[in-house]
Image (cartoon, rainbow, N blue to C red; front, side):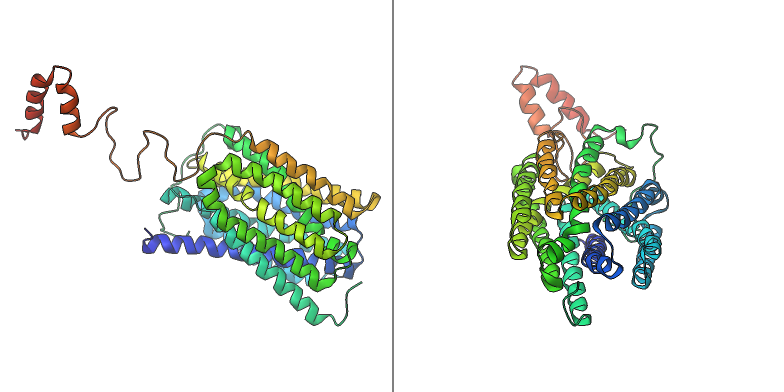
Length: 418
């Protein structure tokens, strides 16, 4: 049942994911136009995106501890203010040398929003013992869809021809606990999440950096079709995350993530072999739908595996993902320059198969809301092992021949203390 405070907590988290997605959607569409306007080749574009990823990595190493110590609000304020300033600087950039500081600020700032949104979502799950991260990431996909379509429409209107992760006092805010001596990455489930998120972010980084260039340049799709393609990808992700919660409850995390990797590989193979942008968008729809639950489910695993230090756990796992962002644009950009962008993106078929392979080793802990045998619901009073109702105990004891003495003991227990 949604109480007033719980509803406010959820809407706060959802709005953060939606705004984060909007920024990402705008960023993904603008990269191709920014690259064309500045005359950047794929390797230079990959370098610029890598600088943003390095900035994000710096943020995540410091931001997790900051979020756990001072709360989410300062983290989010820094993130939104810095991201807005970064977009202004990117619009004013006239060459690569002036673009680099702008994308560095973007990477530093948007990672604060990413971290803040995911830690708020993790806190919501822990506060109400529910599975919510996948649904919250659906808001991210919806925001990214709006950002991509809106950005493409604005570009089309401006260009006449075709171009060359809770409010203070809410129950979800975690108690500040002293960090344990062992680092969070040594927790087995967190270590597994690091491996899986690294493989996943490699593919995400490549698609975010080069998808618009692939649709516009390699397949001659134009600005509008590129925006529709990116928007369709995020729309499919939205559908995937809206349906993933039910799938996770029915089939479990291991099966869902394994199937996600296999379906994503199929969609990527379709996209890189497509003769035109329309066929590639069909493959991207499958990729977006399939891969949707992987990141939120993995972050949920990391957050619940480190009670009291969920901010550090989520930051550590996300930082590992941004390490893949550092490798991904450079790897794909250099490979594309040596061969072709189509062939370079084909590498993502292998990373998707890697997701499926890793998912077969998913840790055995259940998602939030699933309680292991013997665990208690929130607010349920603790009982001694083997304790049940008085009637049940008396019935069991009488069947063993000791009922007489135990019934007398029962009557003595029921007398008030004197």
